[in-house]
Amino acid sequence: MNTQSILDALAHVRYPGTGKDIVSSGMIHGDITIEGKKVSLALLFEKPNDPFIKSVVKAAETAILTYVGDDVEVKGNITAYHKEVQAPRVSSILPDVKNIIAVFSGKGGVGKSTVSSNLAISLAKLGYKVGLLDADIHGPSMPKMFGVEEERPYMEEVNGKEMIVPIEKYGVKLLSIGFFVDPANALIWRGSMASNALKQLITDAHWGELDYFVMDLPPGTGDIHLTLVQTMGITGAVAVTTPQDVALADARKGVNMFLGDKINVPVLGLVENMAYFTPAELPDNKYYIFGKDGGKRLCEELNIPLLGQIPIVQSIREGGDEGRPVAFSADSITAQAFIELARRVVERVEWRNQTMDPTHKVEITHK
Image (cartoon, rainbow, N blue to C red):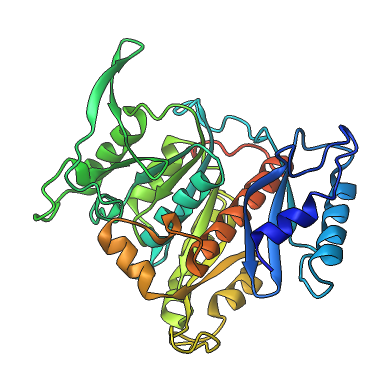
């Protein structure tokens, strides 16, 4: 079983509206993921209320089971997308941005920036227009992770105003305070200074049209988080944790902060990073170094979705250190894990936009 055999099977499926097969008509959306016997893919439709969605998805499942093998795990793994991201404009600050995603963690060291960078690149690989803001003012790491430490954004006039032009790499528009400070020296700023700098990176930058604007927040809960929710309406937040109890306790606080009455930002789900370790020489073995399924249990407790479980893999660390995130590499298992995470985030965002009102910026008053 490989990608071509899946495509050959899907070529037998016709879209009733045109009579053309779904492969030649470009309805296969993004990459096909193969993990053992499990096959995951997405189909692209013109509109969300297409009357043929269910029948075409069913026909695609049947074709794979018929022409590839009846033991293929495909049922429930075919996702339907539509060409227009049905999202309201959530922020007058960024009128051309459709969805704003805040990636956060309760504590440092859980791989939040690794998840943010690979999520952004994976969304771009799926065909979306993506921006990434390194909002970790005191510990900016994105310039190194993208291999652009020597780059410096320039200014250009847009509609009569001088704007910062983000650095573009791997299909992602990127800005970080790390582009503007000496990386060898500590950034000693009070909360108000950091908040003002962050606002400038958001409001004084020419981000252009984006489907997804991903923000890598600092760990914990503090001034920066309040600044962001008071500056713009955030579509949803994604929590990152590792499975051990210490990380889970802090992740719980972060989730509760976003879901609290004063902030009230939807939490799209949680990513369990460093979920397990599999040595290259023993690919069928899993070692749960930080505990097993801690993130999964927290999701059940808080009633939020588990978006993915990312393993500890040497290539993820090497990619971040070398400025080439693993999501941009060839179709490795880890790259596919991040692609699947991106698909889950898209799925959750579309569900959120269809079932909830737009998030407005938070008005915090002092009595």
